[in-house]
Image 1 (cartoon, rainbow, N blue to C red):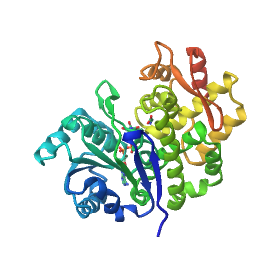
Image 2 (image 1 turned 45 degrees about the horizontal axis):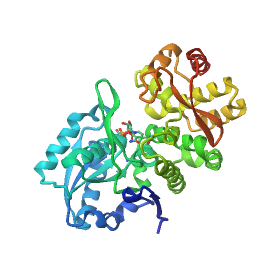
Image 3 (image 1 turned 90 degrees about the vertical axis):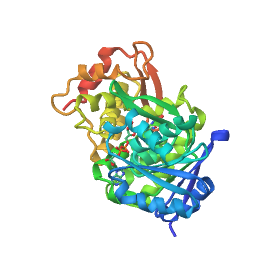
Image 4 (image 1 turned 60 degrees about the vertical axis):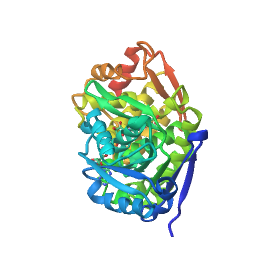
Length: 364
Ligand code: NAD
Ligand code: GLY
């Protein structure tokens, strides 16, 4: 029997458990039953994940006493739209879902974000459950209740805070996850080490072989630790009034890097480059030892993540891209700056020229 780990996100009446363990999907009915028994459930999944796991999860829902309906949508960020959310809600009406029904998200962050958003607005809010199938979704997007969709004007511009009732994650689904997606999730895992857990960072450094070989036992332990850290942050600052912003370490630079690379770099790859840029800015501002920035870079490199802007990348264009960030204060960027491994600070007021200089130092 594999080890099952339970972590609680403490949010008073909106508290919920994250349950993880290898093979847990085969016993999912046991965990699902308290929430779904006697209720209608709409299982939302994308066109890649559906053929692999939807039947199994639908069987588990039925075994748990639910009436299950499946709604597949075309995989990809380009489908994280209001149109898809509308399609989910219309299908929910067709299937007769009422205010006691649930939406179940089976997939990566795209699926979880739109399923959660549909749940937040359908009949003014129904319950939902997250079953993440990417590493990024397991350690980040499935926990914390940020849900939403993209607009043509930009990513995640509409959404709601809507916490799931349960997060159920089985690392065995990573067996089918493309390696590039695993690496993108690893960038977020490294992020947790840098922002708040030096022992986790050291453990990652000591076990890059296990990370690169996708050793599922080790992944289970690491995912659980990341979820514990995220749960702590979310419990302290659910709506990102302050502390929760540290989870965006590397992301303001990273989103702009993704954009300027014309999305040839994926989100996690952009975040890896962005963490290097943030560390470079911290070194140049006298806030971080160069040796610490090098340590972060070495770990990312060992995990085959990019640390620099691909050739042709223009630092000024990255800076302009960063100004589109939702989290800026007035005209100044709010940046997460590392002070050491395990310690970051939220800082604004950097001169544009200093930010551009740090970006330039991370160009190939
Ligand atoms: P994704 O959902 O697009 O999944 C990546 C790819 O992997 C897709 O093609 C998907 O079909 C495929 N896939 C998923 N699981 C699989 C499996 N087990 N086997 C085979 N293929 C599989 O992307 P993602 O990286 O999981 O999530 C990115 C999204 O998450 C973005 O939209 C981002 O804005 C959002 N996000 C949200 C939060 C939050 O707090 N809500 C946090 C971070 C990111
Ligand atoms: N992914 C950042 C957050 O959940 O706040």
